[in-house]
Length: 260
Image (cartoon, rainbow, N blue to C red):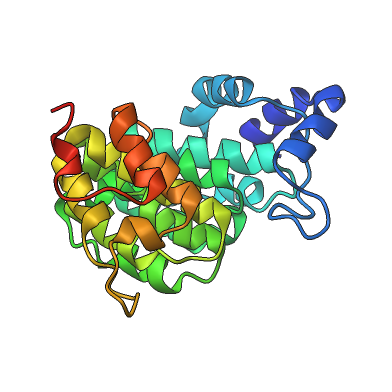
């Protein structure tokens, strides 16, 4: 048993497990169906990772993989998989020579990245950072044809790193791919990333929302055809008068002038 797994298991709190199972929707037919929890909250998991991530760095001669993380990323327990991902983030951040192996490991184990927190806490510190100075076709492929809801979410959430560097084009382009996705968790993710892009460049977000929906035959503005949850997230930081105009379907190219 690896040091990481030993320490995480020691933190199990059965009194918290049922509540976490409900929160992450593990019931029949829900998005997290069948996932199991030890009852460990994220700050505790982060503390364990901070203490022992260095022990999980591959030994000389093992640089082509992460044998110490294999057992954890394949665990039936949600918190153990999260610990493996957070450990991978730390190795990626501190061990420059292992960056490519970290990305290879991450992409080879997306089957274990199967809930929204596992995606959101790992993809942009890993894939986003890795692709900052590289071709980003991978994210478009994940968004368009990812094998799971979670791979598609990785495609959009990874662009958070680009947003933080004021590179917004990929966020808008991938949001367009996912504009009519059927799942609420994609609606929330896309809306969240659009909101973050808008905090850097409000005019660019308005241009996206007011621009024509390339899928809708009537070429209606995107904000009129996108899922309501996505829109609410995207315009959350707008002045109230503008926000209400979007929600009523009355926004226009001139609506952004009020309050500016």
